[in-house]
Image 1 (cartoon, helix red, strand yellow):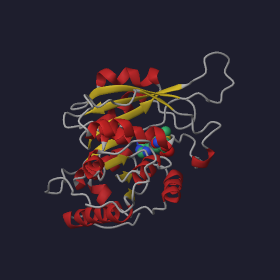
Image 2: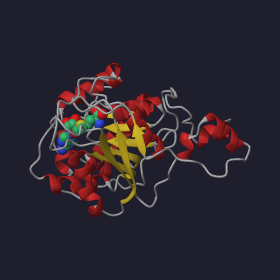
Image 3: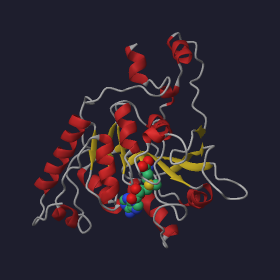
Amino acid sequence: MKPHSTPHNSELLELRDNIASQLGKQGVVILPPMDIEMSSRLLLTLGFHAQCCILDPWYNKGVGGVREDYDEFLPQLLRYVAPLSDHVFLWGFPEIVARFVRMLPEPLTLKCWLTWFYKNSPSRIRGWRSAQMTCLHLTTPKAVMHVENFLNDVQREKLQQGKLLYIPGPPSVIEESLLCGFVGRNEQTGHPSQKPLSVIEKTLLMATARGELAIDLMSGSGTTGEACMANERFAILCDISEEYTRIAEERLGVARIEVEESLLALLPSAEHRLPHEHVALPTKHPRPAVGRLQGHRNQLDLEME
Ligand SMILES: C[S@@+](CC[C@H](N)C(=O)[O-])C[C@H]1O[C@@H](n2cnc3c(N)ncnc32)[C@H](O)[C@@H]1O
């Protein structure tokens, strides 16, 4: 990051325009490495608002960082992102995230307890072998559920004929092999805690329509970015680690944008919000969807068919 003197609204506006313009060109913006407290404050100050936020922190077990202040840290994470997104997906071990279900900051409430079931966890433990992770699907009152993205061809046809009495949603248990285990090598980037694309994709598609925004401020290897690129959603990513930011850049073919240090230094102290409504996103996504998920068309697709 470049050192600089005093920041002004004009610099914030310039940064906001730069982010919006990069979204229009690449679909994904990678911020320079910073703590989620700072990145969430930055996006709020600039006026970005997302439909989907993926929150996938390290846990105090397995690989990754260990935090003494864990019980305070997790609700804090939710407070950072609650004003930024309509849907928040908090990933974690069930016995850990369960403690926080009753401590959700307003306006978030629990929409669904999702389970990711993986069969192939590599382990020499004698006894129960881990095969599940939890994702708390949290929503604000404004959140829209996009169940139409999960229709298969037959259901879509019935919907068009007016014969689908209700739109069925996907199951709350997502079955997918563990990426960092023995399979999915073609997706692996070297990040020790990378989630499979198809797992993140399901949460993204439930929360967004084509052309909407997802943020992931603990983005690791950039899985959320790849899911967004594949499905014509915009993404803003950030991670505290230089090493993982580089991995995400390489994986997505997107270079991080520059942010003046002086801008960040101003943020914690001031009520510094740009006078505006939410930032308007580009009207057109630069990358066509590759349609990886079966039957994941959204309302726009249905209307066009
Ligand atoms: C479980 S990994 C995320 C993996 C990611 N979902 C993927 O598929 O690659 C957690 C990430 O949070 C980042 N992280 C940890 N503490 C952070 C903080 N305070 N602010 C921002 N990122 C942080 C770590 O560097 C790590 O990459």
